[in-house]
Image (cartoon, rainbow, N blue to C red; front, top):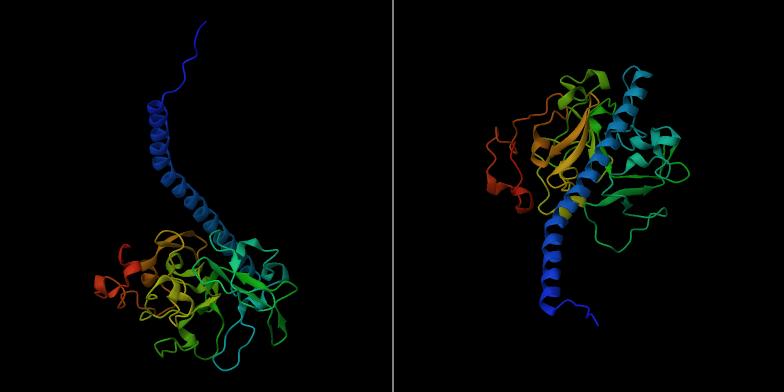
Length: 281
């Protein structure tokens, strides 16, 4: 009678070791592939926003966005002025980066007890401002607009450094942006409107960005391995290095050689530890 040969313990351990080695090799590659897919999806969403804004602008003499309240220096709540089908977060899924789809609060405005992080979305907001409403389901998302495109008659909101950028330095319409491929239009962010100034620094830690007064800190977030996805005024979309944010042309007189750039002689130790390892610009 022929005896069947079984695996010995040594052979079994060798097979397990080989599988473990292969998993160790493959898992980082799978994680990179998954992150690459999320970045492609995020860039695609922002490219779609670029198309949407250009479509709105073509029908409105270059204007594509307005503020819901315009009193004093309050040029806020631009999403409320969008058409209903665009502002409803349950219907317009391009509001969300694939890595940040969970709003920080529910429809009643209650914030869960979980710790805020860069993978949260802002909202859900159900505000009514000067006759504009958030619609049936409210607004929520994980992208922020370069708010220097919002029409203003005075100064833009005062920055964390006490600066008030004059309205004349904003972009009067989408087609007025010079070198439009360097003018950010919308990008990964923790709020829906952003007024960065060159002196704005990054958050001291990645989780500080939610409470940081710096508008640049609210979009300088490490959602994509040292990058944020961005669509520009010319409609192009690409990933932008976190430190590259300071050399983009946010408004007409934005100093792209400011204190957080190579041209401005930023020192490596000036950067908080979490961002220090990423390339300088």
